[in-house]
Length: 181
Length: 181
Image (cartoon, rainbow over all chains, first blue to last red; front, side, top):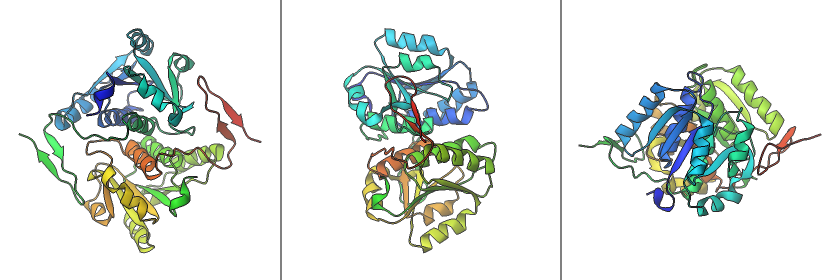
């Protein structure tokens, strides 16, 4: 399993706007789920369609992943810090992943990973315990999140999701699934 | 540098539709560039705005990355194979990344990495030399591509892009850039 060496990993998705960001935020959520996060919190905007899309994926493919939308970002971050959790902010301007990943893992705290848009408030850089650059190049927050989580979980790429109705059976060619009873 | 142990790595983005896919395909392109691919080929639809967005990023941040759009997928794949290149198709249905990555690296061929939408033609599964699952779970093609490239390049996450007008200076807090003369 992913979650032996820490308590909880949650992704905070900043600056979601319905229509414009719906697909990218869905990619953020699927990436978070597949790579072992417990939950995604989407700030400001309620988006019931997004919640339902991800709920159905989890119902079908297993695990206990959830999405909440419409949360205000500042109280969410402050509450997290007050309860002893640490904050990782993914940004191309930050410290290279390679240099900080061991320290982040060692903290053994619950981790809130903040990903967002170009217009990240400056305050977030100061609230974060670590501003982390997957690379110091413009990149997608979706792939930055995927790569961060893969490194955080030591490249385990675990497929062990409990429950669900469907399991994909890895195959050399074509599509094979098992329908669970 | 990324490119010591192979000749060329190109990403083939299938099923791009203007408006609906513009942002996700931009994320694919930025991920491909930041993680060391040489080029992205986008099938079927011409999209000059996408090409221009990525051209400007490369002009600003360096490297020799390019995007072509409006290419027919079948001839592109066949031409690639005829010239001795190999095909990796990223799909949740494929063989786990961990099991095939060493074999893919060993081939020392030019690699075409195919990423796409839910409606990937069945033919692609047969044209591919490797159908590779980053995880056997629903995931984003953006993060799947990022993680695949990170593994392919042995987790080097290289920032060494030649030329460009701007360099990001990694920092613990805030945003620092160097403007090149």
